[in-house]
Image (cartoon, rainbow, N blue to C red; front, side, top):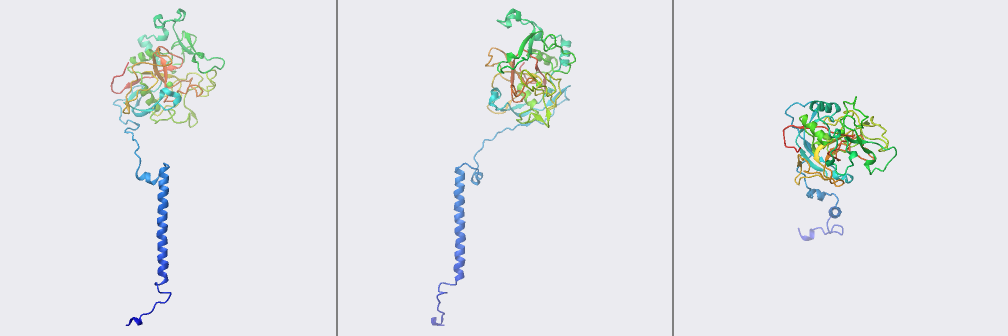
Length: 390
Ligand SMILES: [Ca+2]
C-alpha cells in the first residue's frame, strides 16, 4: 500500500475523535476540583488549630494532659467482725475532701485523702447513752464545775460560776456579724439542763446530748472503748460514698421532695418557722440516713472531731494525703489565744441566710472548753488499732 492510499485526515479528525477530548477535559476538571477541595480543607484546618479549636489534627496528635495517678473510690474489703451495737462500717477509700468555694476559705482546696476503714456510731450520742456513762463512772462535765480563776484571767469573780453557752434569740432582727447577739453564758446550763437551770432533758432520751465540751466527749468515747473521729473520717463518712456532692445525699437541698435535715427556716436568728418539723433540736434519726447508714450528718447538732483547728488543710505533696490527723496545734486567726478543735455537720441553727455549714465540705470550730445548745458528738472505732492523737 502506497502512502497515497492512506486516508487523508479531514478537518474534523485531524487531531483524533472529539470524544477523546471531551473525556480528557472532564477527567482534568475532576482532578482540579479534588486539588482545590484539598487545599481549602488544609487551610480551614490550619485556621481551626490556630484558634485553639478541637480539630482532627489535634486528635491525631493530642496535647499532653496531666493524669491523676489516684482516683476517688470506696474500699471493697470487709471488716473482720460483726458491727458493734449501733455502729456501721465505713469502708474507707480515697475521696475529695473539702471544697473550692472561696466564701468558705478554710475548706479549700479540695484535695484527695485516703482513709482506712472504721466503725462509726449511726447517730449522735444520745442523752440516754450519756446518762449511762455518767451513771457508770460518776463523771461530772466541765459545764457542771465552777470555772477556775487561773483558767480565765481577767474574768470578773461573779462570772466564775458553773454554766454553759445557750442560744438566746433576740426579739428583733440583728446584724448577722456578731454571734454574741444570740449566744449567752447561762449559769446552771449543762447537759441535763441544756437551755438553763429551768430546762430539762426529761422525755428526751433520744435527743443528742448537748452542752458537752471536748474533754467530756473524749471521756465518753474512752469509756465506750471508742474515740472521736478525725476530721477526714467525719467528712468521708458524712459524704456516704458520693463524690464531691454538695449535700450528703446529692446536689439539691431536698430529695424527691423530702426534707433531709433539721436546719433553720425563717429569719435568723429571730424566727425559726420549723418547716422541717423541728424549730429546735430534734431527736436523732428523724431524717433519712446517708448511703453508709449514718443519720444527721447534716444539721441538728454539731459534732466534735479530734483535729486541732487551723484555717487551712495540711495537704500531702504526693496525693492522696493518708489518714490525716490534723495539725499538732490550734490556730484561729480570729481568736489566736483560744484552743479550738474542729466541729462538723452544722446544726438546727444553720440556714442559707447565715451559715450553710451543713454542707459536708465545710468546716466549723470551737473552743475545747465550751459546750453549747447545738453541739454534740459521735464516736468511731478503728478496725485495726493504729496511733491516733488523743
Ligand atoms: Ca449532726
